[in-house]
Length: 428
Image (cartoon, rainbow, N blue to C red):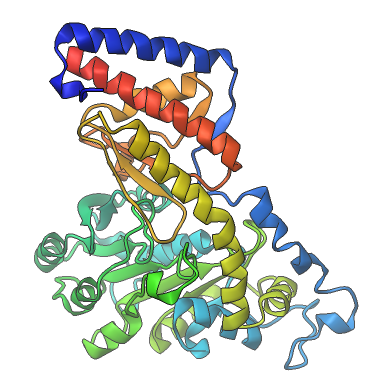
């Protein structure tokens, strides 16, 4: 078939009529399919069921240092849990605080602390007339939700194949001391699957900032979430902590991670890593509202995952389930959209998403059509601050939850919707 752009109006109208017939057949099936959020599948969740039986007696509740984990205490996490999370955070256990089930909560709390108290002697951020935040786009909608909820002005900066556009980031932070932070998903980013290059990491660490309390919120959510079993096919990330220390900016970063997509979402453990001075300050502030997080769950995770090798072996099982789904996405989009110009998508080596860029002005229409046909996608615009994609182009595809046969059907619907939306645009 000729590319849509090469068809005359009559040919394109005929193709649109054919596509609408195909679309009507999808609607008639009464589908209920979901590619909206990066959730593990039931098959993946089954991998971690043994976690639930790791504690079955009173003796099982005793940590390696003799702590009875059924009781109060140990604000910053069990030593063995710190060691485990340090492997995900690429840091030393003494620089780690283990939290509850949500790293997003740790991030929100970190922003709130800086607003209320400042950080390491700086003025509380809330005392500024207004503060700003750099948001690489496309990015994670829940990050943007945190900063928006605090009334922080968000500045979008485009991502490229190496990370955020550092020329733009450096320009922004150098000239405005009200810019206090940047959201980063530095490995297998959400949604683009990008891993920051060494140059980007070093530039983030070394860049001159007008605000001496500027902070990098380093959400390493996918640090161990490779799709390929061989190290040569896995992305490697330079440690932001090491880069900041070498740049004489040792306090510039907060690192976050969790086991949400390792074991059981909502029933995992999370952690923050930072410089010794930052960790001391965080513990001081935490102590007024937290006595301890769930130490029994920390024990379960340590006994189930054990160490870095155990974690890697467990994640290989996840990869074996996920890899065919990402292969299917690539194959279906390549075969289905060969005649549709202006469509691009990522081919990630890890993480949970594919970032799809439709022809400009088509994303909302595509998502609407898919929804009406029974396929739920992430809302168009969600990958931008304020849910406003000025190009109306980016759509996040989350292929992880549905089984393969449902995913194939959902992708067939999606491809049909992309073609309809683009044909309508060309005929408008």
